[in-house]
Image (cartoon, rainbow, N blue to C red; front, side):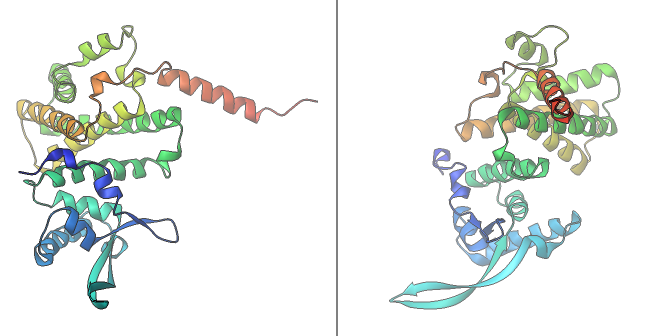
Length: 283
């Protein structure tokens, strides 16, 4: 059995390339090795499934899967030409989502490429933002995707206010190792009128965003029906995200520090700053 501890973000960062225009890409042959596929023909079947998923999701396949030829060393100074594919981050994400789920490295790849792809969707150069701006960006996305999640849950059969409260709470319990919304609220020492999402750092928010988006996708993709089954799905997804954080050696969300400033405070400061910048200087 593979030792999960030998895998990390660097497993995929180490084979990342950057084109002259600044675009990140990966070579399929190198990804094949990292994902522990011994034969190209078997790995290419996974790539074909990923290409189909790319097409079905409305993307242009050639924008994410670019055929190239490379010269490789075959020993004694000799080289031969082989076919390869330049892959975008989104292409890599689709590949790992279609890969063998029994492989530990596949699970790590799914989280790595899903989170990074989501960050890129949020805003360009996400990693260059300061912590306050990261929090604002991810919190805004949480607002959007919580609405989408609520709609998906309703379609699945989560109809009453009580059912939805249970549904939401179960998602947190899965991600926070059994802690529900009230437990998290109490742990953060918040007042009754303060929202827990407004008092999370960017890392904690990102984990919750991943929980929400993956649950939303799963409910729709698998056409899950019934309030109980939808609620259990939310818990299971939360627990899977938690397990992946653990496997990556990350800090469990309940142990992450609570920021000194709330999202509302950051917004007020930003609004005040913008207002000051727009005010003409008086000599």
